[in-house]
Length: 183
Image 1 (cartoon, one colour):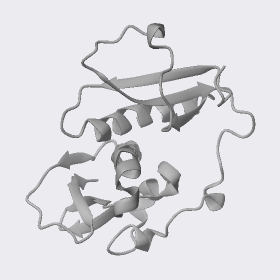
Image 2: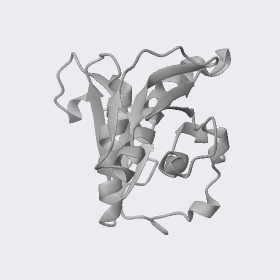
Image 3: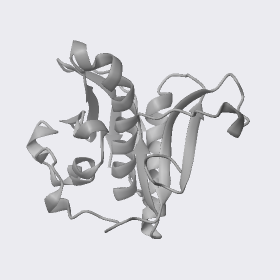
Image 4: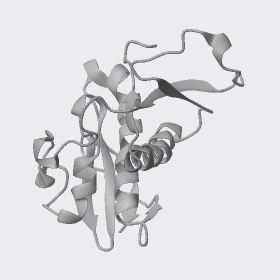
């Protein structure tokens, strides 16, 4: 049993390619949301490591990224959205847009909510806030996973119309452009 008290863990490993952290967040948040829909609690454990390397037979070219704890919840499986400490819609976008509610409710590392959206004709441009110098080493890799988690929420809420593209973008001061979505 780990100190987190969960009976099971999913250890995520990956090749280190462009956007691999965002991809992990995007794919595995969908799995976490599915597990929650059938009554299984999950929690991203970002400050974890695999102590017993002999427990798993992993290709040495893959890098350990993160753990997801899964099991029966001690209490309620869901938190009321009104009790969640989230930025206002106008704080995560160039204007208040109810279509961004799934992004607003997405979980993030230390509740940093690093995403920001701008509206551009049919697209929503997606940006990640640049962490300050002190937080960069610790928070930047986690916020990349968070961006994938956020996009997973947008995808699930807009499954029929969602598309993601990387477009020519002029950027936004203090943010890094990730891509653009249609919903």
